[in-house]
Length: 183
Image 1 (cartoon, helix red, strand yellow):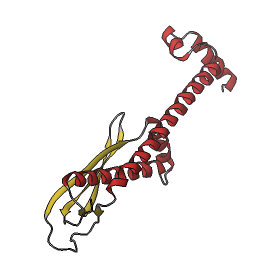
Image 2 (cartoon, one colour):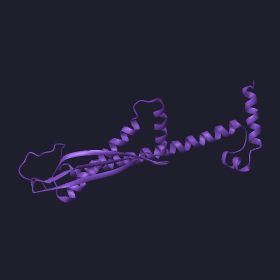
Image 3 (spheres, one colour):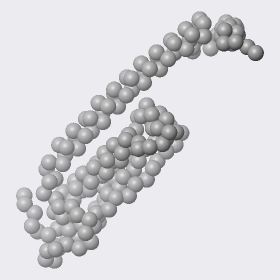
Image 4 (cartoon, one colour):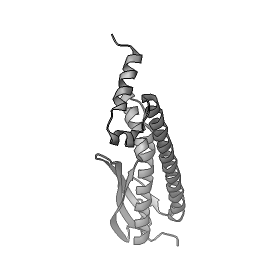
């Protein structure tokens, strides 16, 4: 039976005879120097990536808050009918957005899926996507001179590939111009 010290000695001997490219990528020294040095680099890059993603997410939420203010007069509901006289015009309106997570949160989500439970990072992603899709729907309504959107629905599509984990959110509804809009 081999001891831990013997295994470490064997790994250190293997590192000593490792090819030059291995030393260029991982550094040279004992196994502990390689592990600790690379762990600190990975932690530093991960922390920097998380901070940048946090700042960008916060800016996006602030941007959505600013864009919602001029659109507050557009009425949105999920009813199939409207309770006013004949509309002057009606059209289909669509707001679509694709929102992706950064690679570091995707890694956290992967570990969370292993244990199970509520994945708050996905909740925030879906909430941001739904809100952005609704804002884009209202912006399209505003461009068309629409003051009410009825029968609003959401649809979601998960988009994932080797290096992409994103959600497409689509909000759609019937835009109605009732002539009651305040300018």
